[in-house]
Image (cartoon, rainbow, N blue to C red; front, side):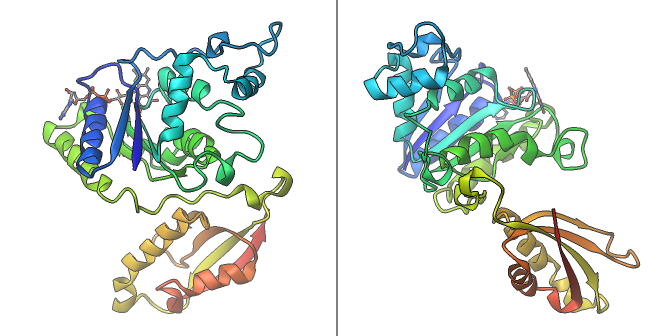
Length: 319
Ligand code: FAD
């Protein structure tokens, strides 16, 4: 594979930079080709304006997408930008390596996205989502460090959940352009942990990258499910789960398999939310929000749950 690592940290001795360099080494050891775009070291200019172009479609009014479409037709991107666009076009896998800044990308990397993902050349018309540059074949991954810990982004923390924070990248940049988003690799609060814990993160990253070419990606909805880009053709179903038999030893032994099942449904984009009461609550209930075509499809999924024989499901379509 040709791998493009776009790295955005101003300190080469930072932990974020150590992760990015470890990723580069690991990929090279596997025989992949790595293009390491070190945005600060290369003094990438993140400001998007007329300097993006060596051509002009409209000298009186700068409309970026119009100029991008024109530059696409006539080969009018500025040489520095043309080079970056070619790096993106050439890769089979894209890695964004950065410290989380204000719940998002550092400006230099956001500017790289703003300038390099150019209308006409990279996206537009039918060239979005599964029809986009990645063609639902290329892969992409976030490699991120944070200040806050996992609890802060875990769904009940003071900050939004990790998936919400990363949606602009995972969905808005990667999947919008047809790149299959992999689960992010997050090194939580590296400045507040021990050197040994940091070393473990580096080793965990290297181990994970061994199977990155075949790792199942997060499935996000294809454009085909939204005719005319209108409302989702898939419906939403709330499933209320009750127990019809007591929790015996067999039940308890199947809990890890049950959890793996739910995780897989989340990855496939079938299970949008899951909430469960404490196992000892009486009466006990769990709630699942599904994205599916119809009740029968939901029933088919539920029947495959390892704990299905102990459970009863009430399915209701919701708006
Ligand atoms: P560093 O401080 O560079 O590294 C941590 C430690 O690792 C250092 O002691 C370093 O020496 C050591 N180290 C380096 N290399 C190695 C190695 N090979 N092996 C072992 N140790 C090593 N955080 C949030 O959670 N949310 C936000 O919204 C947010 N917004 C921010 C906005 C701004 C503008 C800034 C500046 C920070 C923000 N932060 C936020 C915090 C930021 O995300 C963290 O400071 C950053 O991610 C930490 O990673 P780092 O690589 O910079 O750590």
